[in-house]
Image (tube, rainbow, N blue to C red; front, side, top):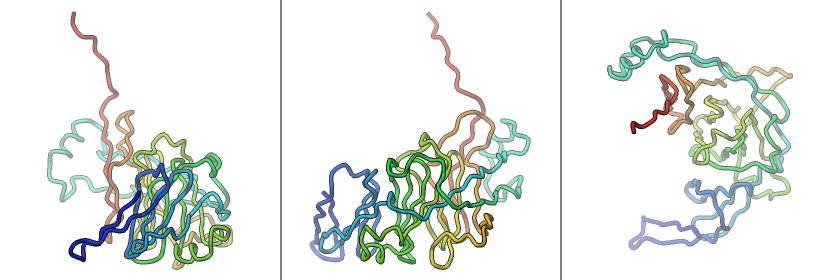
Length: 267
């Protein structure tokens, strides 16, 4: 069961949504619709006023597929890589930066065709987001696949049998081990931000909110990747926050100085 509260009224108007069981927990909404993540069943879309189900977005029917294969080289934040420099960085003011460096972003190349991830029919779909400036909808899966629906309204009007003509899949090399809390996802200004295996990808879309590869050229202007860890230790953690802003990319960063050790308690 889902509930939509219209707080513009007094008392608030409540709309009950009869959703299917076993929803993943991720949802997003705009001025008139709400989208629920249903795991392997894709995304279910409901009207916020009537509570009516507007349709289902099932990424498994998508046939327009691409994949990224380049993983960016590790760039240590602290230059020398020692623990002392790391400690100083965490205890001094963040701005201005002590050692500003270029080259953190690695250009991403995108290839036509599916990735080596497991069959998409068995994938689990987590975070999904509606773009506030367009009709774009994007979803993210356990195995690092991104479902791109340039116009969710047209896709729902066309029905599930024609969804493949209104959507794309961007795959990546992931075993699902870093999939945490449904995955992290952000969209803004024709760009998609997501994380795969300690790497954050920033993927640019064209004016029609689609992946565009011309004449077999795999280079993709405006698409980059960056590492989410310092490379100082063996511990790798998924990001706990990331967002695309008008003038910045914000993301958490993992710093590890040494592997964990176990000690025998004194008798």
